[in-house]
Image (cartoon, rainbow, N blue to C red; front, top):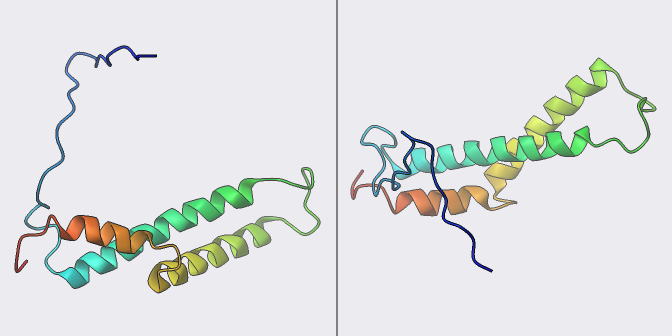
Length: 107
């Protein structure tokens, strides 16, 4: 089975990814590592938020309300930060490796 070619709307074009990062984007490997960990933390928070949105016990949880929702959000944020710094999921390391190949030498 072959798929038909993709046609883009007028004025929309796919540009190739740049081979280098923007000159002012990242200044050091340490900054790159920190940025990759922050991105991983955001990803993990979104993952946990989606998991918590799943309902297993009907509309009313046994213990719930806005206080529990706020607590869970703070708990998820903390867990995401710890997981990204510890490398538990490994996304930050992969992001760092991919982007470090695009850094200018000595930059």
